[in-house]
Image (cartoon, rainbow, N blue to C red; front, top):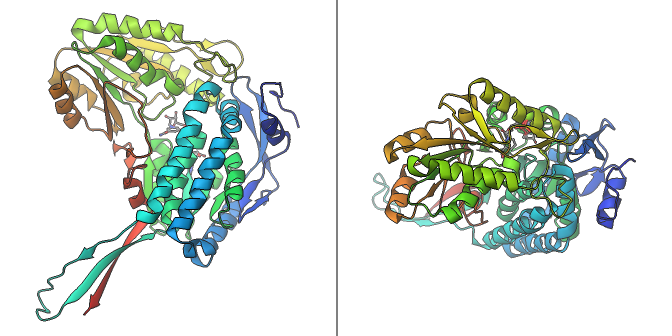
Length: 501
Ligand code: NAI
Ligand code: MG
């Protein structure tokens, strides 16, 4: 098979991994798709084929759901003690850590992100997530509840709640953090004792399949984790609609989030959604700009702007607007754009030609409507899906570039004069995922944090993630919270038991 990156930089394990067509994981076995079809995954730095992957569709999803169903209903997974479930997850975390280089390279090759970033962020965060969630396996508790039933005045009861796993879970993840999104989804589901069918994004299936090998090695019983790569409209849609799936968890576009909700109506499966964002980043005159300027630049340019929480609307108080805009533009110009596998690269290509076209389309629409680029605004080079880090000014609140999620390295900078005005603008959006405030006035920071309609607010920092910190959206950014102990609620049912004593 043709691979385009078999140079000495690529770890031998990964060269081997890419050398044959990758299969799907169903019931603990690596299998071909029912149709026999495969699809290509592309290296976004070159636009050339990186590997081939089994193309899952309805029948494969059905087989995987059956395996997960059986593993949940009758398999050994439910009989494992919570402590043993946690130990399995710890073994997986250790394996992720000992394969950091392989996973980081695979992530870079398939997604485009700098390998240097994947090594210190994506992979360690994934390992840490499994460890954090492993700790919860032994701490999923109910309550005892005193009753005072008015129509049985002379009877006493012992009442308590049990938190039980929701059952078979379908998980559909995007391409921006392929390994980490798999971890965010799998971690709480495994900790609570669910079984899973995971569908990675068609653009970036490889690290999830590599993770599948580590899952087998860690000793999870067959059928507990099934991984079916394939396209959204086929494999994804089949998983969201499947009548034997008890819950579907989705991360991706708001548009597809709506499809997921509709598909779930058949059996009224539980749904959690982590969708888009257009996050406001507020910089006040009294901010520490030495930290603030690089901070707001990295809020948008980290992961090439392909973050659901990217700080894509930059509101700067009038007195410092020019200084901040030129500072951020300077940061943007200094970012070294190149292939993710080059150790000196700071920003890689966007994930796909489709994403590049989408981002360039937004830039075009902004320019047509009168926005101007202080820096950037174009693609970089002729091959690969690179786009310049871009700072736009002269925008209007109604422009598409200000209202819609671009999901690329493009920030709109807007001046403001007072707190009320900026809060009104910051909250004037269908999304509510994240926001940030930069100020040295701690009272102002707390006041604004309380007024922002978003699931995360960072003060004098941005993109700070931790397995213990819940993440999710207000408004059309989603339903539910991932990470932290809140995530356990997405994967458990509460049972009330009432005993007459
Ligand atoms: P998408 O929402 O189409 O894809 C995300 C996942 O959903 C993939 O696994 C895909 O196969 C699956 N999917 C697609 N259609 C489906 C369907 N009908 N039923 C079930 N599953 C389905 O996102 P796409 O097209 O890759 O990117 C479009 C835009 O979405 C981006 O420009 C960005 O604005 C947003 N997005 C947001 C993400 C986030 O982290 N919240 C991640 C990826 C994209
Ligand atoms: Mg799509």
